[in-house]
Length: 119
Image (cartoon, rainbow, N blue to C red):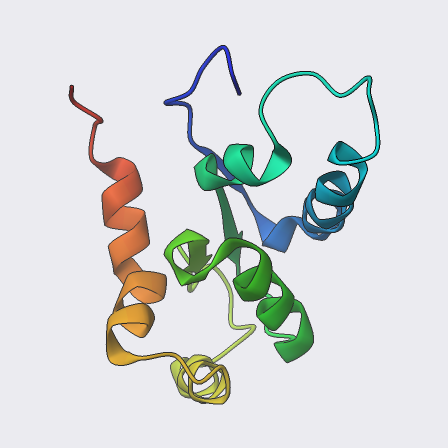
């Protein structure tokens, strides 16, 4: 990420393994003399999670680690009848997001990602 600081990475299908590693990497960064580059927390600013998975604890973990500005819910929804819009709204309600955070998660973050970065 140090070499490509403007690179934005989206992990589809909630990328659970990457989330777990991201949490552990921060702990190891402070202990491992061999770690190279920026701190994992700094690299996470370019990491986004896209999900149609609706496990509350997993979504809360993603929100706690990355923040609502890095969560995208259902950018490819509805590709198949897995979850109804009503269920999506119920899940968002249980996440206790502000209206601005909810708007970001539902579309704002995707719009921002698709907007070219200009200097």
